[in-house]
Length: 204
Image: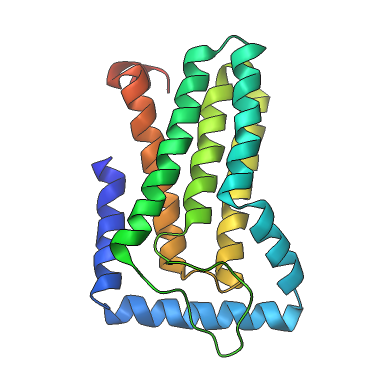
């Protein structure tokens, strides 16, 4: 977890200390991205994506897959691991926001987005955890080709949701990156804790 946690802590420290290069990049990126959103008239589409990628929606859908894996495929251990990992990660993300307490971007012409603190991005963190946890859960059921397809779909979904946060002006790029890294770190650490370090290495 330290390999993933340290970059997030460094970003959080830079945010709290208002590290000039980081803040300047974030501000420039968010202004450029939101201006493009207005010019392309994509606000409605991005707001819709924001709604369907809310953690409560993502985890409700993921829970259905977990229940199917438990009941239909008898993958009880993996299903319990996936559900627990997602719920714990959701809580960790919420606590992280309270620790850093970064305000959301302030725009000249406001775009609609969620309220609350900005760092790390909850959408980015939770979609990363959900996508990667479901990928690991279903891995034994997939063919070689199916695994490549599943990885590709998971990466695209995660990246698209992250970009949505930036282009909608809901989060700075550093918030989204922190969400990606922390989410992946939580999932990987949880998996290693579940199967043990030796099993995790041998299963790669």
